[in-house]
Image: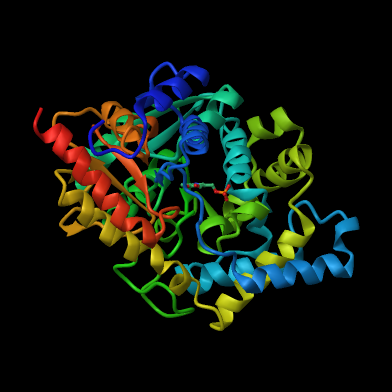
Length: 438
Ligand SMILES: Cc1ncc(COP(=O)(O)O)c(C=O)c1O
């Protein structure tokens, strides 16, 4: 490819070696493997935008607390399945301070990353009512959650929210919910991959419908506080992280430490279940798991069976990080603002070279700059764009991996270093020169 630093024959050879039938349709991990091989063989570095790795050092307060806990000997002691008390208390305080929502500490349960949290929540929700056998994803979304559905052998329905913002969301949701087979609604906010953020009106619609149809809303807050258009970082002071929890008690929140504290390697998050749902009796669920309440099914049946709780030392790390942000001695949003600042520059580079943003607005406001953004190139499908960019040393995943109906790709900013911006610009120019002439 003219102007590209990457040798096309090496890329083609590695695609063959990995037996990837169509690069454009490759999963995140396949793209990772391909790019690793090409980088190794050519010695050229890619602009890597495929995987959501934090890209910042872990929060120091967490690392130090974890080391201390290990030195104290927690490594030999099984933690409580539903979490150590100080963590449960700090998590409830965090929800109060940053969401303005009251929850009982007993419903704040550590999990091995939010991945484990959603896994057990899907498993429980799928068994609350015999008539309700389907989860509903408000897409685009995080592809691994669909993989969880596959592994669990569960049914799901999905729609792309692109054309259903505002009041239209109500009509679309009711279309699904009125069938009576939906047990839960899942979305991330801010959204992976599009970085759209639901407005208060939209969250109210979701909450109202959850009440009307008695479904559980699973709100994935992996990017908590990262709508950088507003400062959500002050404990106890508005504005707060917007949440469906203001509008319904039928919710589970998933708060991950991976991105907000760059603590992905230690695999810890908390799921937050309000008391009314935690204590609820679902006869079908009780029969299926020989259990009592919804909350105890999650802890004493599901988490107990899968991992018997979450790493003891990581729980102390998360306790310390939450305590520090609750007390205002650590501003977690300041630490991750860098993502938004990099996104602003990267978006500009793409826009100057013939690309367009796919998911552009939250109703009437331009979307925030954050961890991800979505881009398209005229005349190219998302799959073609992924495949063509690979030859120019830029890696990403296609939007159709995420349940989006739009043609484009997801760009993740976290792994791209500022000193690569110049190279990114050069490669985008070469790409545009090659394809704008076609
Ligand atoms: C929307 C979303 N949910 C969940 C996760 C995974 O979180 P964890 O690392 O806590 O398992 C991610 C990670 O990329 C994500 O983007």
